[in-house]
Image 1: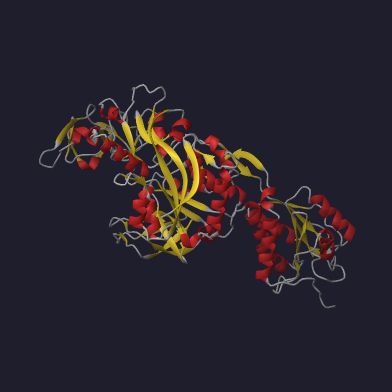
Image 2 (image 1 turned 180 degrees about the horizontal axis):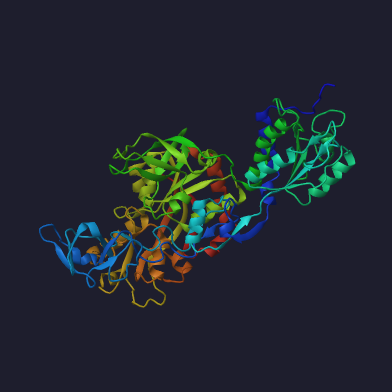
Length: 636
């Protein structure tokens, strides 16, 4: 008897049709949230952003073996005129990881000094915090260390434990019910007669599901080819499970009823594929519960399960199950390296202008977040002095190629509100992938100009025109190549300890010898504005204790103040309030998003702009003290 199928589809069309139906029914919303131990979280999917409870490191730590010294006392040291330090008094022996306590603020490596019984000789000056891992170097307290809908990797577990998270919220695993059918199907260990078939398919399918991160449940009973019985068990199990898989009966022989059973719930998506083996696949829905009818022949079942169960679990969990591999990418900036050492550089990747671009992250053996947040690892040969801009390189992927190609890579100025909005977009649209590299306003602008990103954020004050951003945009970007969205105004000022014990009132107080300060990195909008204020008030930056001590985020500055490492630092009011610190307002800045015009219709940009337009209507700004909502397009 010739097989007849209702709706036969090509494999490509079938995958697309099934994927579109899963999206339309928003099956990812079916999974509930549960709290688990971080030690049991490998492979699980976060259900909310996870925030660091402490900084890493949470104290200033030596990055090398050597001697802790006061950097100011090493000034003018030379080979011909070395500085002498008494061991135990002016020079404290330290090993890598040892605390560096005030007034010591730098470490000289043991191989760079001459050691006698009581003294060391230093032959070159050290700057403040040289060879010291400062508080929050890897991540700061209050920082999102793992975003929402992220699959936990071994690197994530290291970051979560380092950030003092012992329990986290994750999505439950998709529950899948497997229903074997057919009077001839028997279980291993049962007596067999001629014509019987051993049920290997159910366990093979369950193994696929476990590999994909789901929880499979195989029915204790093997059900007969009876329409009413099969319909009832599907109806009942649909109330408890996220996905139903029926094994056998998917063709159109005399005893094959699954097509009719599925059709009794709703119109099937397709019945039959134009592939061999694997032709008799059928997929439908009971409400928003996917129903998959797998063929009884083992190879057919294997092929269909491998493809379509993967699609279903990906949509339920919002995480791609493609396995990592190597990929060719283009470097848009020089990446220097030292001869004689093979270096493993962690990188972020993005698809821009039909090219995969490669952007290096922080380098250093202690910064585990560069692995957890990184997309891949670039190996630089020991015989190379680095990689030149424009070079094509091979990158070993840490994530699936799909995630990398689809992600929106954001490189620019650090802002807690923007990171919150990006997580909101992902919460509503799990297929929205994003990555963040905090490099400051100028660094972000240069990344946009180089083609490393399609979106950045800046708040760069120009002292000559007394305006924000416009002169810098004209200097670094081509006219009419970008859109400006004035997102918010932020209050900038000095973050000081609770109660302001040092009585800091104005910038002039920073020149006092008893005040320790922490700055933002060169090129950041906060640093540019701070330098302008110093110049306007004729304040000598050389007199500021800590002017050269830099942090890359506002959270890092607040952490340093909160923990008493410094007395104050430059940052935004929101972060001061978040850490229960005091704030001395110095001005209001304009924070803008800069987006390439030719990417305005990109679905990721469309989703982000749509979410931004919702922020004010949902009254979310009440949680962000020190922000003034603007959300206005600006002319170039």
